[in-house]
Length: 235
Image (tube, rainbow, N blue to C red; front, side):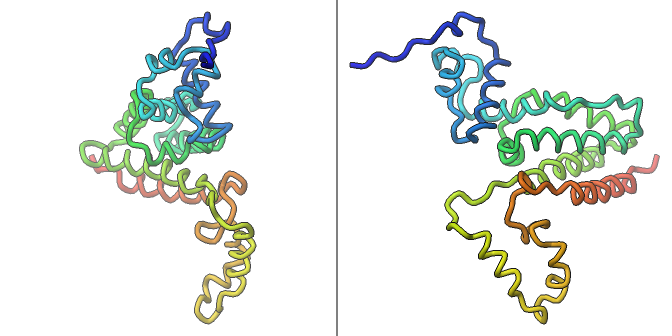
């Protein structure tokens, strides 16, 4: 009978939750979310799986904690040095930059409901800035959801993965299909196609991981912030 491998010398070092989550994020960055398991983290750290489990609980909790770990890489600006709308713009761009550094987390952050209190500091700061701007009660929640929903939703779509089981050559086929669209049926689309080609949602074949959509993000962010300015409750 083959004996289970014993943890190596790294196991003698104190194991911390931060070390576990840093290692988990590294695994997700390198191999994707499917590769993230308690055992994989244990192997990387040279400890027994039970030691990892003690720090993060179930895999579901682990995934939520890794998604929240991303907020550690966002340096929130001092709200005293910005107007409230400028502050939101800075945070949105920093959030996007952090997601682009860890694109495999994007799908989790946008679709995984289980999170941890690690996300609460940024929630608190966003709410505080919106309160100071004049939002309150239902308008506060609506403004918060509009901002966070935009950032998370945009990044989930921009950084979406390419289909895993697609036929080879699907990109070339899609590009050819776009070129063959009937201008009588799709006059606006065919006219805009030189600019839409592989640069817009539903007419692209590369993910934002390879073809970032920074300009479009800035345009959408401008529209959002303008809308929030216009919806500040009258005092």
